[in-house]
Length: 344
Ligand code: FA5
Image (cartoon, rainbow, N blue to C red; front, side, top):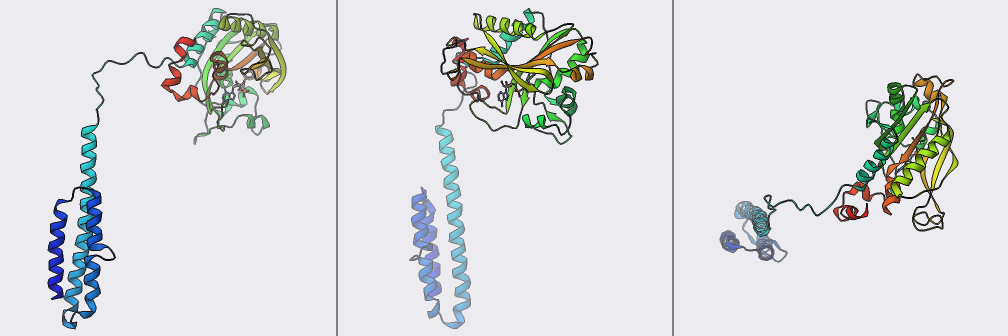
């Protein structure tokens, strides 16, 4: 009698589960058979009343039915999910690859635009433009610019090291040695490039940013020459005369070292949002090339000298475009990028 009950329940389940349309219906069926008050629970409760000689057969049959119901419910759930996906795909308006490109959105990254402007300005002042590598040796990035192993100045630039002992260059200065060796003791070279530092990000700090390095080497070069070139670059970029000032700085590869600040071009020095009220913008660390750096590049520091500077390019772009967060520059966010076509 109880065995018949199991067969009956199976038939009912087969019928109930034959045309389920959605997850809600499926859940009702699951509760009807597997729930606390469901058919399988009911049958199991009657196990005590089953005669001893039928208990084994009863047990096997009820467990088999329970497993079948569980499996079928899982299968129906999967089928409903894939039907749902098919429906969504059908209803989705697919991208039409044959449409013409909407050239009105976006623009060149402002960094690219200003880099070209600044590079052209230096080119017009007789500078040669060079390139640097992104993966560098420890020697080029540090030792060749007078930062020996274990020197505390290495902590100024958190470094991404590669497994082979090389690194992602932390500064464009990494190309100084190669460039000085290539061009010799009388040269005027700039070398823009992407640099990498393992830094915590904020509105003014990126881990991937751009610098523009410049070196001038010759006889009797002075820091006044550097000030001349920087002022000429700023005048050309901002279309007006911009006052600059030097503050003492420290870099192992320059002696003496300076920080060059520019009078805020937006408020003329009165103090504004861009300059944080100080009237000055930190623009460019620089200094006279350390004799050790010249020596390591095969140049006699008794005969020749020179200056070097390392413009933080992203910060210059922020100043020039009034951008308040450096992270936009790497975001390629079209909403931001498209605004620069008219701004520059
Ligand atoms: C240097 O990297 C030196 N190599 C520059 C130099 C060259 C000095 C030649 C003297 C002679 P510093 O770590 O200060 O210095 O970085 C130079 C500029 O890069 C900074 O003034 C700043 O504008 C920019 N910079 C530094 N760290 C970041 C950062 N995390 N995100 C964005 N810009 C940065």
